[in-house]
Image (cartoon, rainbow, N blue to C red):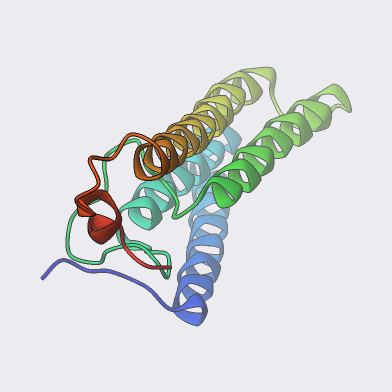
Length: 157
């Protein structure tokens, strides 16, 4: 059975470990190889964390066994929007740091592209989930055949 994480405390623990690990590896790479290497390591750990969490975390009303579609990164629209906002803020704060003279412009461009891509992925996830919910609601409320097949196939929650 594939790994699935469903409890909030375990999800928080995974994210905390990823932040500590990413910061530690980023600092180590920065000290040993320079600031660009540190930034790239931190970005790589960030992307790996997003992919890992998107594949393993499950919402309360989400089926555990089947794999999520590749575009679905969260269990709901709201959490996708929050994560998109988080990565937009990450990109803006990185740009502001360079504008203030802290960091290198080349690192900022790479970070901005990565954070923009992550934010866009979460926006796509939110939009598709919202579209699916709208389609599911319209199918179950108006265009059914009266057999009850659409309402019995929906998961409760």
